[in-house]
Amino acid sequence: MSSIGSVIWSSVGKKVITGLTGFFLIGFIVVHLLGNLTLFIGPAAFNEYAHFLETAAHGWLIYVFEAGMLVIFAFHIVAAVTVAVTDKMAARKTGYKYARNAGGRSRKTLASRSMIVSGIVIAFFVIAHIFLFKFNAGNPLPENADGTKNLYKVVVTAFKDPAFTAFTVIAMILLGLHLRHGFWSAFQSMGWTNDRWLPTLTRAALVVAIVLAIGFILLPIILFVNGDPNAMPLPGGH
Amino acid sequence: MSDSSANKNNSPSKGMTIHLKIWRQARGAAQGKFVDYTVKDIQKEMSFLEMLDILNEDLVRKGEEAIEFDSDCREGICGTCGLVVSGVAHGRHAGTTTCEIRMRHYEDGDTITVEPFRAGPFPIIKDLVVDREAFDRIQRKGGFVSTNVGSAPDGNAILVPKEAADNAMDAATCIGCGACVAACPNASASLFVSAKISQFAWLPQGDPERSRRALAMIGQMDEEGFGDCSNHGECEAVCPKQISIQNIAKMRREFIRAALRG
Image 1: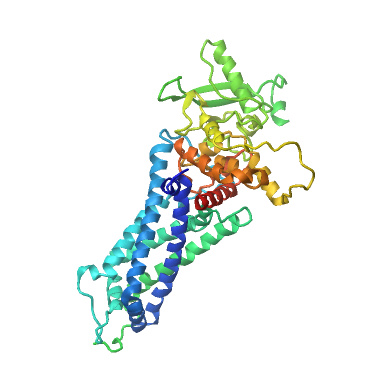
Image 2 (image 1 turned 135 degrees about the vertical axis):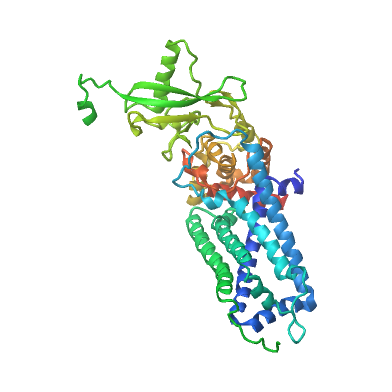
């Protein structure tokens, strides 16, 4: 009867796509945060971690992973943006002149209302931080004595810039806001909820949002305030 | 009561004065506007719709056109009435329809705004009356069991778990008033459609047609131009039957199941 395409891009299909890709993205940022923590161990640990990622499976892993992330991001963004466009453009052309929140059992929050805005800012941040940290803003990457990339230096240098540090902090606050609604909403969009689990999941969303946002904010702030916390000659460095 | 003892003539009829801002829109007009009205002598015991009846009687006496609004049973079971009262569909009290709003919730001198349910697929017919036939068209795509189930089966011949029966019954309390659409920031009909899908999906009688039902009703919902759900949950908060958004989750499970099976 209905073609695969029309089913997938139906209103419910788009929710399932947004939720499913959302789970992958949440998994990714958890791993990303754990990876960031190697910065606190020291330059060597961070550079070795980066080196491992870039050379695993003869350097193939990173490309497969990046391609996968690109596809996941694309589906998440396209599904979410088309939802937002349908809602804003078509569904209610004449708005209420006087509208209030219903309160009570509603889950409508600042977070749920601003998903598209927080999402767009996060997308810009993702692009900016890849440009900066992966490509060193177009400059050649600094190297360690053994010829491996010194990404640690790139990160520490980037967070000397108050503008970029502020942008990072704002983007990560918005990431927290995005997850406040997005975490439980992903379960709901996949149909993995019921009346017993919904209250627990909405509370868990708040915890996940706060923990991940603080985790990602801590690093740039510490680096900005302290400069290089491991300001010592790099092992095997200059 | 203290306010009646304050009445000098001791008559119980001296009631509240209520100011109303009511949306008026001529039949076929693309736009309308708020018109201010004041009604006097409103008793606490009256319902909100009785107050509108009194206002309409006043208007007719003055030779003006009465305000059109929908209502039928006036006891919260038929789903005909539906107004956005002071910014909330069916008013600010949970679990009630517009006809169940009582004037005892208001104070003398209060101002109440009254708007129609607004959504692209619910075009305004006149004043506060909207066309909700989109819901009927969705229902016609699968909101029924098309097999003849015969007479009542022997007890326990078909086993239905208590939880499943409860879930189906809760979903079946939907009266199709459209408040979920009216309250949704996206004008999504997800709560209505999910209630109609899941009331059958929980039961063995609904099982043979569950995939076809889910895809057809969701397809019609999209075709009508309802918005997409963003899990705000405003629908559940205004639903006069307090239908839970767990039905929307159930609808998505039904959708995934149907999509995978083809």
